[in-house]
Image (tube, rainbow, N blue to C red; front, side, top):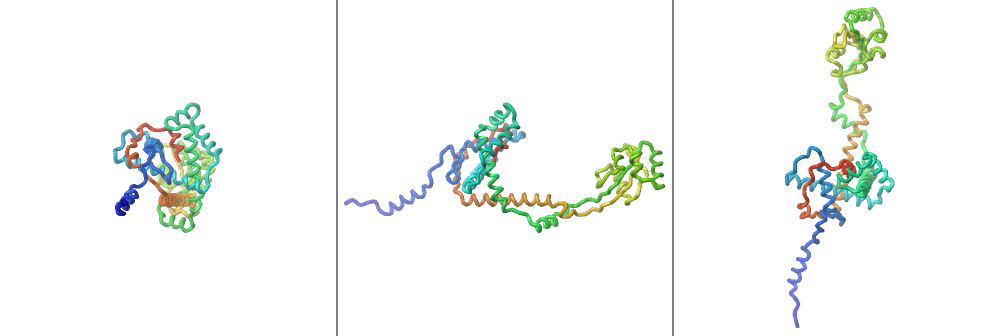
Length: 329
């Protein structure tokens, strides 16, 4: 009676099979995301788009190229993760919406320029439609799932204003008016009339050569540095209601009257609410999107085809088409 192989040999063989790991990926595939392939040609196309700046005239070093390839590949992986998540949630964009977006891009490249732009970016029109659908789907997912949960509170708005007070300082300003004439003697005569009680606005409308004469010489509010230095020196030395002596400039002879003064102060929240809210909302959305993507990565089965990634050549130095760049999700 023949004996079978020893149990120890069977166990070793079984262990060897277990350690062998998954089969190698197709050489035309640079990575898989939850079993879905990212073709090598897609990475090569994206590398060309990522290196399209006109000032890029030199070939990157091997270290720079490897870093660039990994960065671009990570972008493709992230896009795939988001598209898979959108599909799982039943989020999609109607074909007519995609087509309208494509038509808008076509309108920017009339005649043969549209086909030339596609060719320059290494795209066909079906490629453009597919990429546009992907872009719009990702945007819809992020808007409806990620950004929907992001909001800015009153405490956060006020806290940012308090922490960045120097960024919201309003400089000292004056509200002034002027009269401009060509002759010194006329300027002196008008100054004497003002001292006798004439209305500054009336004299400005009647005699001033400046465009603001129709407004009674009103220069509105201005801080230091907006007007010529000789204007600032006078306007910021007067108190409300005071009229200056004659001031000479290349434009002629001036008389200034300060109507109001406003000291330097920090802007109130009501004045900067929209600006601060936009800033905080953008920052919070970026963080929320990064955290959401990180969660998708941690739950995903991602395989990189390192031998293929190493063989991917560098991007072309010549810039790719703007249309291809705009159609990138």
